[in-house]
Image 1 (cartoon, rainbow, N blue to C red):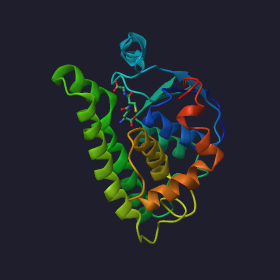
Image 2 (cartoon, rainbow, N blue to C red):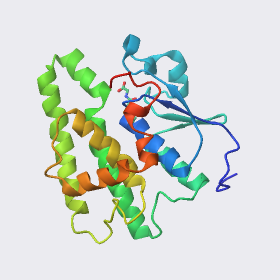
Image 3 (cartoon, helix red, strand yellow):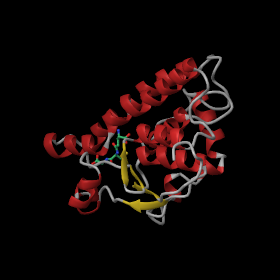
Length: 227
Ligand SMILES: N[C@@H](CCC(=O)N[C@@H](CS)C(=O)NCC(=O)O)C(=O)O
């Protein structure tokens, strides 16, 4: 039942510990206090388990996350997060007014549509396999697009009246669900957060919460012992 606040069907997340798109959904599920199982999909082993026939049936795009809710297969992290918000409205991932919701969605999409896809595994594998781009140059590419996105994200947080402890006010939102995993990626690629004081502050605030902490890559059942 929509908006019932109860879990009648099992939730199972097809996830990879290091996937930032899956990390977004793990945060959302934790914020909602929903019990879920993790079904690991190893994106690198044996050429990538996302390319198996079984997983292809779950998501023809061959990307994680997929959230199985009962018999339904839900795809695309932002659409999944909005689904969770509609099914279990409290605590809300989107603010109360249309204007604030627009801002939060814009921040979330800045990450999910304009940073992350450029640096996704399949893009980097394409550079490597089809064009022979060396690792060092691929890393420059990744860092370039993260910094370009973070420059804009930081300026949208700076001095905006809606910016609070989190991207929007005093409660975590869809924007934080997207930002924190992207910061994890930034750190992986050695990007300093010094030019991004608001992003760094919000990351610290979020990761101090058990809901965000439990969603961290290194806390996942499929994370290697030393991540
Ligand atoms: N727009 C999709 C992106 C999903 C996505 O790109 N997932 C990555 C992991 S973060 C993936 O599965 N990559 C596998 C590959 O590139 O082969 C979403 O938000 O769910």
